[in-house]
Image (cartoon, rainbow, N blue to C red; front, side, top):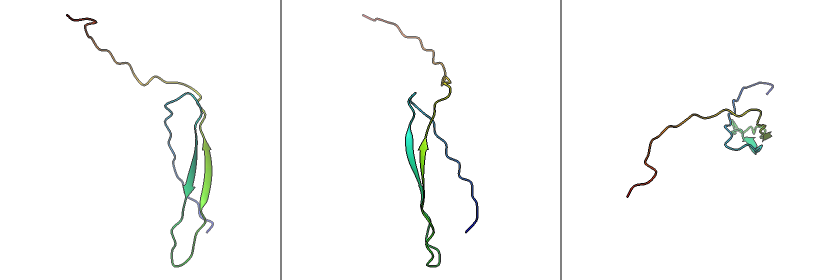
Length: 64
């Protein structure tokens, strides 16, 4: 009780639309004592778009 911990949550968006998720943190029973289950509602926000990279390739457009 009354302790703090850090949890990093990383999300990589594949779409321009915001996404929503639910994060559940469920504690284990230790010595017959149950801990609290924590529930968080996560919502993403797209602030900027960065290109993933450029792919160059050569190919004939038409072959007989």
